[in-house]
Amino acid sequence: MKKILFSILLFISVSTGFVKSQISVEEISVSLEKLFGRLRSASEDSGCLRINDSIKLLIESYVASDRIFTHTFSNLKYLGQITSSDSVIKIITWNLVLNNEPGRYFCYFIRKPPDGGANNIYYLTHLYDDKQILSDTTYIQSDWYGALYYDIRPFHEDNRKCWVLLGINFSNPMLTRKVIDVLSFSTENKLIFGRKWFDSGKSVKFRHILEYSSSAVITLRFRSENSIVFDHLVLLPPSGFDDRLYYGPDYSYDAYIFNNGLWSLSINIDARNEQK
Image (cartoon, rainbow, N blue to C red; front, top):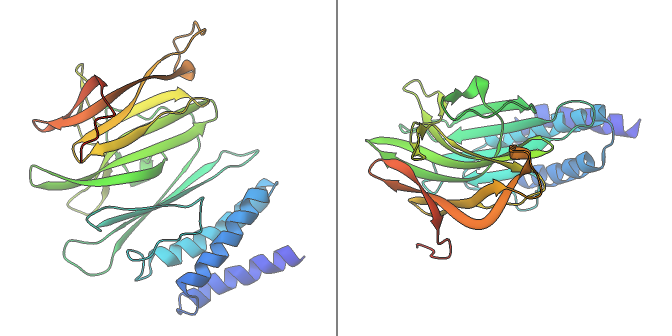
C-alpha cells in the first residue's frame, strides 16, 4: 500500500509541481537515482513499467527545462547523456529490461534550432525485437531501430551539417549490435538517420553495423574527428557455423577514415597510433 501511495504522490508531483518549477534539477536527480535503484531491484514486469513511467515523466520535464544543455546528471549510471561538441544536440537514452515482455528503448533528442528560439524535442521508443538493422536505407523517428547512443560528433559536408553517432543495440540476448550512423534533419526539421556515406569497398552503405556474440567485448570509438576505429570481427573457433552469433574480435582493428567525401573502410590499421 505504501508503494502504491508513493507512486501516486510521485506522479502528482511530477505532472504538476515540476511544470510550475517547484522541483529543482537537483531534486529530480535524487528522485531519478531512487527510481533507477528501485527499477534494478523490481522483479515483476508490472512494477518495472510503473517505475519506468515515473522515470519518463521526470525526464520529459527535464529535457524541456532551460538547463538541459548546461546540466548533466553525475549520479545516474543507467541513464545515457551525451552532448555534441557544438552544443547543438543532446541525447538522453535508457533501456528497460523485462522478464515476460519485450524490453524497450527510450530516447530523447534535443536540438537547438539554428534560428534560436525554443529547443526542438524528439521522443523515440522501440520494443526489443530481432529485426536486423538495415544498412541500405534511412530511418525516421517513427521507424527507429532502437539503440543506446554513447558518442556523437558534428560533421560538415557539402554545406550540410550532420552528426555521426555511435550506438549499441541489445535486442537479441545472444547477439550484440554496434552501429555507426548519421543524424541529420530534413527541411521540415524531421529526424533522419543514415546517409549513403560508408564505403566498404564492395558497396556504399547508409550505416555500418557490427554484429557479434553477446559474450564478446569489442571496441567502437572515434580515433579522431575523421576516423572511427573498431575491432575486426571473425568467426570464433571451434564453431562450424558461419553465423554472427559466433563472431568476435581477433585483436586486429579496422577503421572508417573520411576521404574524398566518403567514410572509406581500411582493414588492419594500427589503433595505437592515436591522432590528436
